[in-house]
Image (spheres, rainbow, N blue to C red):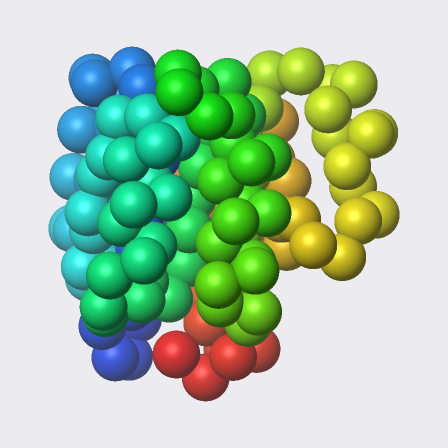
Amino acid sequence: MSTAPSSKCSVLVVEDDVSAGRTLAQLLREDGYEVEVVLDGEAAMARLTRAPTPDVLITDYRLPRADGLEVATYGRKLHPNLSIVMVTSYPEVIARIGSRADVPTVILSKPLVYAELTRELDRLIERVGA
C-alpha cells in the first residue's frame, strides 16, 4: 500500500459495482484519503456541483446514467484543475481518449492494480499540492 498522504486528499470514486467501490474506498481510507463513493454517472455529476470539490475523481468508464467520459468531461468543465483517473477494461477507450485535454489525467486498465493507482494518486497530489 501507499504511504498516507501528508494532508488529507479527498477522492470521489464512481463505481457501479458496489463491492468494488466499497473495497476501493476501504483501501483508500486506510491509506489516509477522504473518500466518497457514488454508483452512477448522473450521481457523480450532481456531486461535482456541490462543495467541497474533491481533489481527485476516480471513475469507471462503463457506468449507468452517464459514462465515465461524460463524467470526466463535465468535471473538467466545472473544475479545470480537477485530477481525473479513469479505469477501464476497454483498451479502445484508452486509445480514443488518451490525448484529449478535457478528459482524464490518468487512464488505468482493469483489473485495477491498487499499487499502480496509489502511485498515480501520489504523483497527482504532488503535482497539484493537494
